[in-house]
Image (tube, protein in one colour):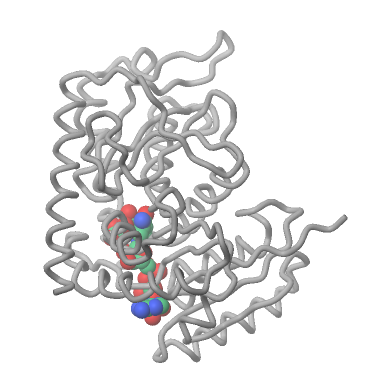
Length: 332
Ligand SMILES: NC(=O)C1=CN([C@@H]2O[C@H](COP(=O)(O)OP(=O)(O)OC[C@H]3O[C@@H](n4cnc5c(N)ncnc54)[C@H](O)[C@@H]3O)[C@@H](O)[C@H]2O)C=CC1
Ligand SMILES: O=C([O-])CC(=O)C(=O)O
């Protein structure tokens, strides 16, 4: 029997990530090729005409899984009955800006959209915040939507995770699908810690640690880390626009794994509400290694953390605490 359609909200749908993301969702990249979807697309009035153009293209593409499109500038209409909410709406960073610089503009959006989601989304709606500062926007959304369970509010660090996989794959000239279990700890910002200490590569003689294969701790402890931390800025420099296709694809990965589960023996990185695991202060949205099953994520426990890593985990937590304080000061 055909499945009932799932309603997926994309905010900022007329923007660059939105334009890359909605066809992926309509093709089943996010929820599976047997899962019909109804797309809810929200943008602001100045983008209404462009949003309507995206809707026209979705109709023209005749996606078999797409059972309906709601394109609106009304946040209540956009949020009504949605099962998944991908929050991309906001203002992107430009060359020379830190993600913190977009804070003032974006956190107030997340405060107001929190109440619309809380009141109008379907029960159990899963929320992914993409817009920057992603962790702090997600935290604001959580705090101003107290009836949405905190386990249902996450932010995107899967792009950073995928970037880390990509760097290792390039360095070792192995297919990216053979690399797994990197970790992005902390903030989706240049303070994040891309950690390869538990990462492995599938080889004909079994999984081997990335460190053993790369055989260059200097590169792994320095250049690799900064390349991943600065990749967003490098893309902005090259394209004069921030990452879009990779962000859209990673957002699909995030939701797909969350809803359909991670593969046995593999974890992914997600920005989730900290419960104090790994001595990360509770009450921050922080990126951890997680596994997913039955629609729920769980932080991978018990990984040994060396002194080098500890410092980096703490540094990015400190930045998130500062961002939290700054966000509240912007809202006052
Ligand atoms: N977490 C991550 O890995 C990544 C996050 N980003 C962030 O994603 C966000 C979107 O990036 P782009 O699509 O490139 O930007 P964009 O400027 O092309 O699109 C953003 C869209 O949001 C809309 N918008 C603004 N305020 C809104 C509101 N209140 N409600 C609904 N829509 C609203 C704009 O009209 C625009 O159409 C930015 O904040 C960017 O920094 C970008 C790449 C990766
Ligand atoms: O760097 C930016 O502003 C966009 C972004 O979040 C990324 O590409 O990781």
